Length: 56
Image 1: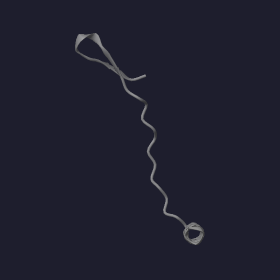
Image 2: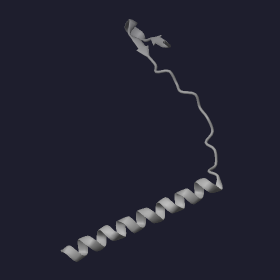
Image 3: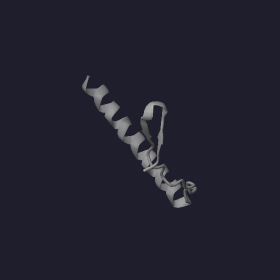
Image 4: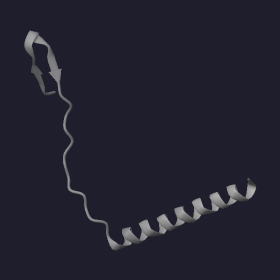
């Protein structure tokens, strides 16, 4: 474990850094899935608001 010794003999531990990686651009299928899920969420929220407005 990497550590340094500070003034007065105190040890300062550092966490192990995770490996870095580059994010990959979403494919066209991923983009389509995001669009479908977004539209579904909007429809669901719209329905919930409509029900809440109707009940109140």
